[in-house]
Length: 123
Image 1 (tube, one colour):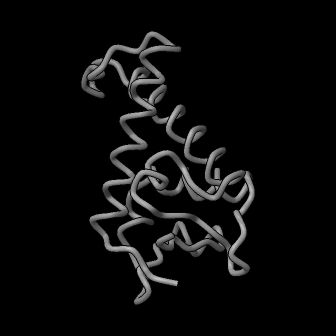
Image 2 (cartoon, rainbow, N blue to C red; image 1 turned 180 degrees about the vertical axis):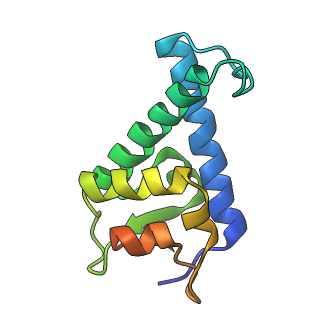
């Protein structure tokens, strides 16, 4: 099991954010880029909702989101299996808070990974 670089993980995150934003534009009619938070926060929160659903569902069911797939990464539990939808949704929601993702252990597991019992590995 190889631990992925921070750049690879950030690349996957960027791809997932773009997919979520484009999905929100296409499905919910969100304008992108959204208005600044002090003017209309609803647009931003809709995109965050799409991000949590997209990443959480795909990661929980398949072990990888679209961004992770493109970057050659997968999300797994200790047994090498997908972590399931509830834990993946928890992990993704914590990721949106940013701080849990910044605080990392030696093996590059953020607090969001520790809370969900997951790890990101290279394929």
